[in-house]
Image 1: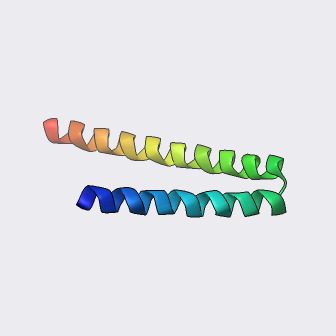
Image 2: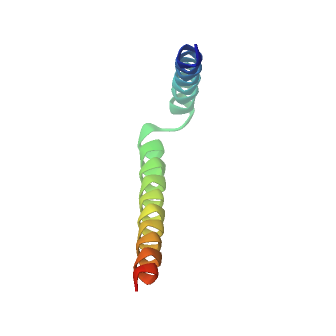
Length: 64
Protein backbone atom coordinates (compact mmCIF):
# COMPACT_ATOMS: atom_id res chain seq x y z
CA UNK A 1 0.00 0.00 0.00
CA UNK A 2 2.74 2.57 0.80
CA UNK A 3 4.21 2.05 -2.68
CA UNK A 4 0.93 2.99 -4.33
CA UNK A 5 0.52 6.05 -2.12
CA UNK A 6 4.07 7.12 -2.98
CA UNK A 7 3.40 6.61 -6.68
CA UNK A 8 0.23 8.70 -6.50
CA UNK A 9 2.05 11.47 -4.64
CA UNK A 10 4.84 11.41 -7.24
CA UNK A 11 2.36 11.59 -10.13
CA UNK A 12 0.57 14.50 -8.45
CA UNK A 13 3.90 16.29 -7.90
CA UNK A 14 4.88 15.79 -11.54
CA UNK A 15 1.55 17.20 -12.74
CA UNK A 16 1.94 20.24 -10.48
CA UNK A 17 5.52 20.79 -11.67
CA UNK A 18 4.46 20.42 -15.31
CA UNK A 19 1.71 23.03 -15.05
CA UNK A 20 3.95 25.34 -13.01
CA UNK A 21 6.74 25.18 -15.57
CA UNK A 22 4.23 25.56 -18.38
CA UNK A 23 3.03 28.86 -16.87
CA UNK A 24 6.53 30.09 -16.04
CA UNK A 25 7.81 29.50 -19.57
CA UNK A 26 4.96 31.62 -20.95
CA UNK A 27 5.92 34.49 -18.64
CA UNK A 28 9.74 34.21 -18.77
CA UNK A 29 11.57 33.90 -22.09
CA UNK A 30 12.82 30.34 -22.57
CA UNK A 31 16.44 31.39 -23.13
CA UNK A 32 16.50 33.28 -19.83
CA UNK A 33 14.89 30.36 -18.03
CA UNK A 34 17.52 27.90 -19.27
CA UNK A 35 20.36 30.33 -18.57
CA UNK A 36 19.26 30.75 -14.95
CA UNK A 37 18.63 27.03 -14.49
CA UNK A 38 22.04 26.13 -15.94
CA UNK A 39 23.75 28.56 -13.55
CA UNK A 40 21.82 26.98 -10.67
CA UNK A 41 22.92 23.50 -11.79
CA UNK A 42 26.56 24.58 -11.96
CA UNK A 43 26.34 26.02 -8.45
CA UNK A 44 24.76 22.80 -7.16
CA UNK A 45 27.49 20.74 -8.85
CA UNK A 46 30.19 22.89 -7.23
CA UNK A 47 28.53 22.46 -3.84
CA UNK A 48 28.31 18.67 -4.25
CA UNK A 49 31.95 18.51 -5.31
CA UNK A 50 32.97 20.58 -2.29
CA UNK A 51 30.99 18.34 0.08
CA UNK A 52 32.43 15.21 -1.54
CA UNK A 53 36.00 16.44 -1.17
CA UNK A 54 35.26 17.41 2.43
CA UNK A 55 33.94 13.92 3.24
CA UNK A 56 36.90 12.24 1.56
CA UNK A 57 39.37 14.40 3.50
CA UNK A 58 37.60 13.58 6.79
CA UNK A 59 37.82 9.86 6.04
CA UNK A 60 41.50 10.13 5.14
CA UNK A 61 42.16 11.90 8.45
CA UNK A 62 40.42 9.07 10.32
CA UNK A 63 42.60 6.50 8.57
CA UNK A 64 45.83 8.26 9.46
